[in-house]
Image (cartoon, rainbow, N blue to C red; front, top):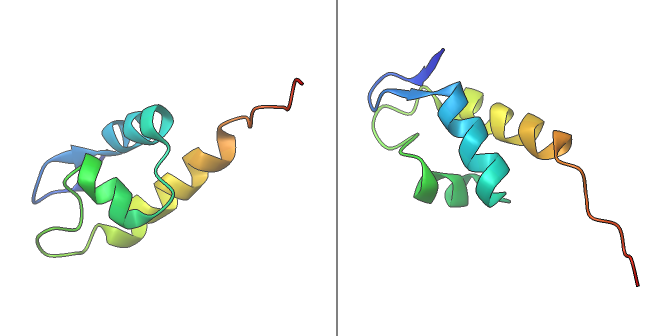
Length: 64
């Protein structure tokens, strides 16, 4: 599904960027994927996808 129509960014693209780079803020996500740069209608959905994806990434355990 397209999240950002202005820049043709899909939810799959956002999920892949979040899994790979794990941005902690929306500003960091914007440096990876061109969302929220034009009309701004995609910001809420893109932020929600980022937060959902970050919660699904397992945290590393302290092994030492």
